[in-house]
Amino acid sequence: MAVSVSRKIGKAVERNYIKRRMRDLYSQNRGKLKEGHDLWILMKKNFSKPDSNEIEKIFIETLLKINDK
Image 1 (cartoon, helix red, strand yellow):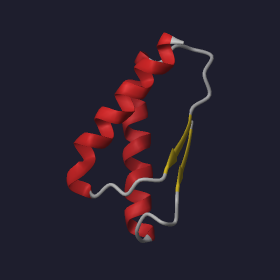
Image 2: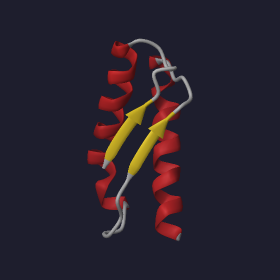
Image 3: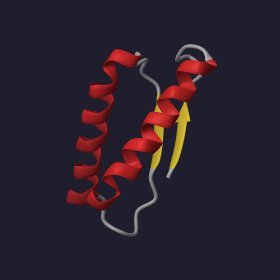
């Protein structure tokens, strides 16, 4: 898994928070992803800390879409 966050999204502290959150979500939901996938996450939209529930929702929805293919 790789995470890339655009520099257009806030300062380094905010970008690093998003990266940590995405890695944490991946480790918590690793079992939902079928084997044989490489995962690259590219964040372009600005999420603030209160929107971490939205980040989790989008992440899980994306994992489920990957498994359907």
